[in-house]
Each structure stands twice: as structure tokens, then as C-alpha cells.
Length: 297
Image 1 (tube, one colour):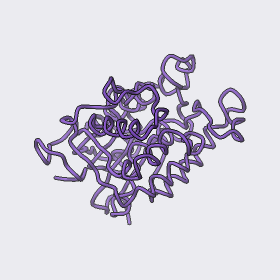
Image 2: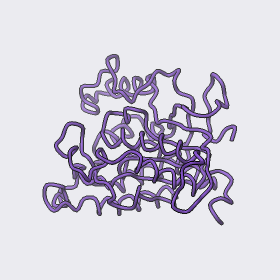
Image 3: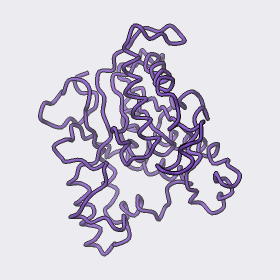
Image 4: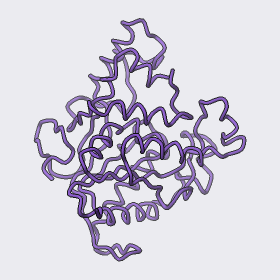
């Protein structure tokens, strides 16, 4: 079946392999299982990531510098777990390199995504939008969730890309017609959910998971007040798929790290619902919280 013959289509724009699974794993798995066309657009190969598997440490950027190609394989395995068939890299694999964390010298490399020409990157997003014609797009907020340069740049490229895709003056390489994305969502974590999770961890005697984070204190920038949450996608039936996809990203996500510690302490239900803020398009549930990103489409 051709992509445009599928009634519901969603595009997710992420910075590195594994970001998609952490943020949107059950959402992607649910919509893929329900027959929607799910497209993942990843902006870098994640070459600067830390290697958590000792026997693969030789792949790191400061050694053989082959982590990127390995993470492509990890992503393919993760997408198999989630049932997603359409996953691609912005401009092709390796067009832009992982920039590393904010403030590192790797931010200055001319080939890194942080140094990418925004109009070029956005134009490539626009071409994917015109090809796939998604009604829904998901990406990060303006701070990239937690301030990573590539997350911020992915946000900028996605938001500018949908503007170009809808602009008749923008000519893509295939001469495709303009397309208006109806709804845009940013990933988000509601404050009450994280505080409750931290409280339960501490009450269970776990002081190491997210060490230094106080259930009653200041929280990371990706956490937002509950009243800013506009959608909560229930993927209860797809938690196993998300966890399998997380395991596939083995160089980046440790089985005894904080993500799986959450599951061990709180149960798999911690992954069952993923939250979003709608920032473009008409609110289908004014003043309320949608349970489906396609509501009203």
C-alpha cells in the first residue's frame, strides 16, 4: 500500500538514535500496530555518544570513531521491535555529525549538526513532509528537552521545515505539492508524574536513580506544569515493545541504568503513557487532554 493511501500518518523528528524510543516508544508502536504510517527522521548517527558496553568501547569517537555505524544497526533493531518500517536519516546517513553535549569542542566541528545551515536542514525536513504528508509531527521543545545542541537544532529544523513544506514558494527536488501539517506536538513530562515517581523511588530506598534530583525540588527543563500537557497517549499494550527497543540501543542505555531502574522500582506501567504539548493546530479537546494525537484529524 502506498504511503498516501494510509489514512493516518505521523512524522517524528529526533536528534540521535535512541531518542525516539525513550521519548515516543509506545506511541510509535501503538500507531504502527493500528495501521498508521509512522515515519522517523533522525538527524545524526550519534557518533559522540558514550559507549556503555565495555566490549564495544573501541567504537568510541576518541578511538576508532565507528560508533555511528553501530548505532545505525541498533536503530534498525529498535524499529523492528516497535514495528516501524519507515525510518531514515536527515540528508542521508552521516550528512551531519553528532555535536556532543553543549559546550564541548565538538560543537565547533564544521560537519556537526549544531553548525548545520538551518535552511538546508529545514528544506530536507520539508521534502520528507511533502513526501509523506503527515497530519501530525512530533519533536522537541525549543530547548531540545534538556539543552543538547542537536536536540535544539532538530527542533528548529522541524519547525522551520513544516513552514517550508506549506509554502508554495518552496520548490523541493521532486516538485511535490505543498503540505500543511495539521497538528504539531512537543515531547513533555508532566511535573506531577516525575515528582511522584521520584517519591516512590526514594520511599523504596533507592537514592541512586536520578541521584541528586529532589522530589520536592527543582526539576529538569523537560518537565512542565501539568496544565501544559495537552495529550497523553496510552500505550499500555506496547510497553514490552518499548523496553525491547531500549535494550536494542545497548551502547546508550544500560540495563542497570536509571531507565530500567525505574521499571524495576515502579513497574513497567511507568512507560505506558507518553505525554505531549500541542503547539500548532486546533485543539481537539479544548482545556482537556487528548488520548490520541490524531484526534480531530
